[in-house]
Length: 150
Image (cartoon, rainbow, N blue to C red):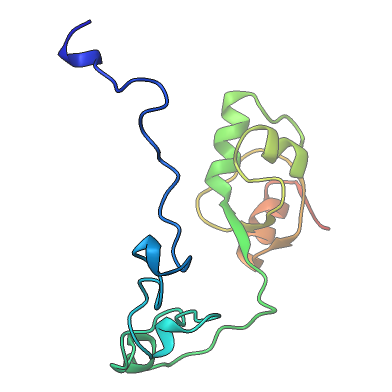
């Protein structure tokens, strides 16, 4: 036994917490440590999220602008040069679909995919994804490939 592992005898310490509102003899009776009157002393009180003590809250002080369309579809963009890299590595030979892109970590399984026209595609590929830009579709067909929209 030394100073680093001293502890009180078993059963000598009570850590049950204070029992408030259990009569005057407890020392925590009457108002049960809630003070007198006001919303915080009542049962069922809960402060609103963002409440700043009556000061105008931040979410009301800051000006609002713009518009968020709840029906917007977000597409994961893939440039043609990324597809060409996959061909150069030998991952892709003739067809590109969602499974191949997901397995190689290019996109996530729940994402919608759009092929963009950035870069240059030399390989003849049959690509089937959700969307294509006009320039990407033209470049794929110019290389002898096929662009299939899902």
